Length: 397
Image 1 (tube, helix red, strand yellow):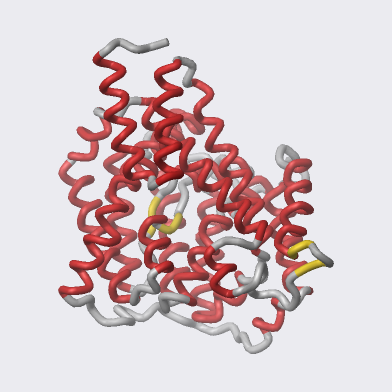
Image 2 (cartoon, rainbow, N blue to C red):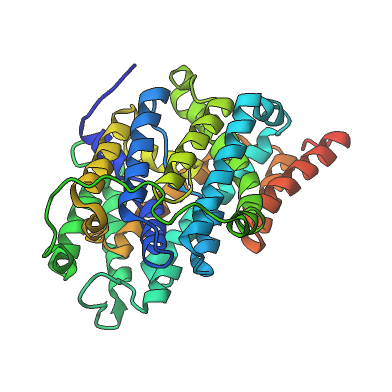
C-alpha cells in the first residue's frame, strides 16, 4: 500500500472542504445536529475508508437529504431516521450482491452523465458561494456569515475572496512546491480569522469530548415514514449513480489496479456502516461522492495519506473541541470554499473526454438538462432509458 504525507497529500486532503463544510454548518445551525457527532463520524469515515480502500476516498454529505432537510428545517430525529434507513438499504444492496448486478446494466455514457452533471452542480454551487447567494448565506442574510464585515466597496467580500483565491488556485494548481489547496485554505483561514472569525475562538478550550449516543432519542414511526418518502427514496438513485458506480469508475481511472478494493459492493457496505454510526451519534447521512474524489485528486491526493490527514484532523477537532469544533472551521470564508468547489467541478466534467460518439454525448447532454431542471435521480433513470433506445436502434455516430 502506497502512503505519503507530503505537501501534495496535505493539499489534496483539504480539497473537498467546499462540498462538506457549507452543508455541515447549515445542518448544525438549522437542523440542530450534533457538531461533535457530525465531525467525529466524518473523520472516522475518512480514516477507515482510507485504511481499507488504500487509495483516496471521499466523504461527503448526501446532497438530496441535506438540501431538503435544510430547506424544510427538519428535526434531527427525522434526519437520524433517514440515516438508519439509508444504512439498512446500503448494507442490503452490498451484502446481497444486488448492486453488482445493477451496476452491470449501467452503460458508460450514463456513468459519464452522472459525473458531468455532478461536476456542473459543484461548479454552480461554488459560484453561488462566491457570489454570496447560496442557501446558507441567504438564510443568514450575509455573504460571509462568520466575518465582521461583508463587502469591499460595492464588491461582496465573498466575491472578492473568490476572485483572489480563484486566481491563486489557477496559478498554483499544478505547483508541487506551493500546493494550491494548502495555500488557499491556509491563507483563507488566516484572512477569515483576521476579519472577525477569531471572535468565535475566544471562549474555546481544548478538552476531551465523546459523541453522545442517540443525542435526540430514537426516531418515531412518523419520523421513519416521513424520512423514507421525503428523503431516502429521492436520494438512493443518486447515491447508486454518483457515490457507487461513478465513484468506482473514477477511482479506477485515477488509480488503476491500486483501487481494486473500490468495488460497488464495498462502497455500499462502507456507506451502510458509516450511516448507521453517524445516525447513532447525531451526525448527517454520508456518502462517497465522485465529486469529492475529483476534488481530492485535483488538489494533489494520490495515496490514502490524504484520508488519514483529513480524517485525523476532523476526529481531533471533534474530540478536542466538541460543539466548538464548528467555530474553528468557520475561519475559512465562504468565498474560499466556493473556489475549491469550482475547480473540483471542472475536474469532474473532464471525465467525459472519452465520450466521442454523438449518441454518448446526447445522453450526457440530456442528463445534464434534466439534472438542472429537476434532480440527478430523474436524470439517472432517463439516461438509462435513452441508452437502451440508442442501443436498440444502433445509433452510434
